[in-house]
Every structure is written in structure tokens, then in C-alpha cells.
Image (spheres, helix red, strand yellow):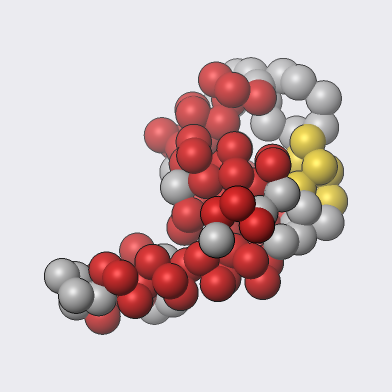
Length: 103
């Protein structure tokens, strides 16, 4: 299902994972997002996706022009649901809910 996503979202999933990409799409989907080259712990993206994920995005896209963030929410949720079903064999529902921001 990953191949159904727009290229930018595939890049985000590769860099920061599905849960953080979902958070970005839910907040910024359909808009333009500036990923800074330098940032501090107070940056809004830190609260949304965490410092480590912002560091990965910044290394790849930091300081470039604003990135269009496709909506792609249906495809992302479908991919998320597939992964949850697969991971449910070895992971508790509560842990999955926390990991994917459903709790």
C-alpha cells in the first residue's frame, strides 16, 4: 500500500515512520510546510513528531523551499490499519494504540 502514497509521503514514511507521517498529514495535509535547517526544542514540529524525527526531516529537507504536504490521509490510514493488524499478533492493543496515536 505504500506505493499508493504520493512521493513526498513515501519519503516521510521512509524517514520518520508511519505514525509521525500521519501526524504531519493530519495537521498540515493540503498545505505547504517549511522544514527548518536549524530549530530548537520549542519548534512546533518537535511537539508534533519529536526531536529525532524532526532531525531526520531537517537533514533531508531542511532549509529547502516549503514542501507541499499531500492529503493522502485515506491511503495513510489504510496503511496504518494494515500494519496494526500485522503487529497485533505480537503487540498489545494498548501499545499499538499509543504507537499510532489512537489512545
